[in-house]
Length: 339
Ligand code: TYM
Image (cartoon, rainbow, N blue to C red; front, side, top):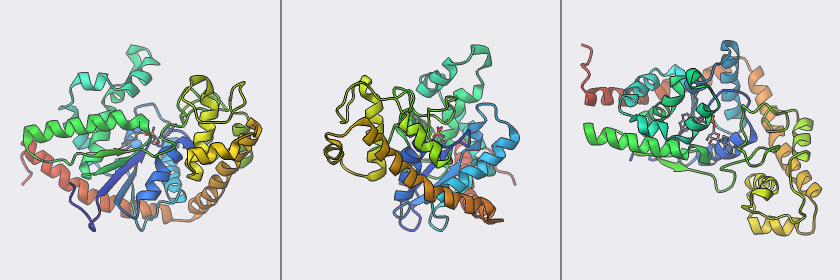
């Protein structure tokens, strides 16, 4: 168990500021973050150090980092309740990541599906070592805060298992130091699929125009993307694991994740209706979610100094915890304390 703050167990999660955040990021991560913030002591970071595992334009990275923090708040993360900060503002993340990298067996890292997927798309010669070591940095993010719970989409579950295994390895070798975190996936929306290719996960880095709805998409455009989503040649509107029905299943899942209705209620609602009706209903609820989010986002980006002050307060709160954990881990590993 973590050192509990205000009697509440702790949550940590993060999103990479690489590209534009999608409704997959919202439904898989942000929506849960908002839902848990009253019951947990929450830390939400913008993981810019993870973003540089792929080359980033410096100006764009800076811009996307602020943009992501504004999206966290616009999605409903309340800076009075939760701590919002930028990963690179806390050097302890990089320092612990190195210590954990030295403890991470190559076999474990090589087995990570996300590494295999991303590395598989590049020539061996050009694969950055950061891509392989990415899970050790993610483990550092989580372990520095003694997080009990990590709310993420299901593509991150393997990284969470890795984090637990690494924490156990460290604790076993050097004595109880880290809390073992548990993963938390949303009931619906843990894996939103691409609208144009419903057998592939919706991703912020996909280049196709009709793949993803971005949180900052113009609303007409967002609606258009949903109306053009790939479906199938059948008629029945119901949830299904059948790969051929992945498009309809994905639309129903988006609808379920946003409305919080039960699957049987949703199927009853769409009984006898057509795919056009389904798409219109999904587009309506997505647009109803994006509209207030974008309005708040625009206010935040135009409010001089507010965002920076949130990130400054977040940095101070996060640093105090992260530095104490880092010190403990350094001591356990045998580093000489500076006098
Ligand atoms: P990232 O930036 O790829 O995604 C951020 C969050 O969004 C979720 N997500 C999705 N959920 C449902 N459907 C989708 N199509 C979809 N796409 C993305 C992800 O599961 C994630 O929760 N490694 C992490 C970032 C990270 C992190 C951490 C997370 C770094 N350190 C510590 C938790 C704790 C990542 O790449 O997320």
